[in-house]
Length: 98
Image 1 (spheres, one colour):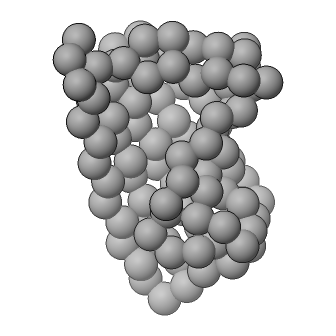
Image 2: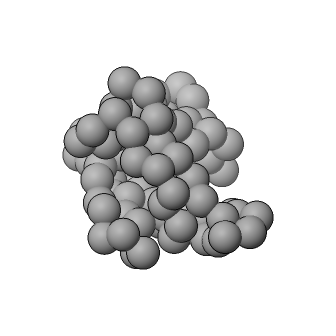
């Protein structure tokens, strides 16, 4: 499986930021009470998400929703169950206001 590689891109148009975050190789485990986080978004969120963004693992076909949180650079990843193990190709796409 090897070491995971993380990458991301974003485009800011006016007060809207469009992001894509990818993790490939290795594995990632989403754990906890159904919520995991990715921090260090490129620009601080001005208003909490009013509609969900998406995450998906291409290898397993598992998908879910994620939300940005007002006043932070964090995106919360929601899972239908409390733990997913060995996700190998995770991709998050989100749009938020700054």
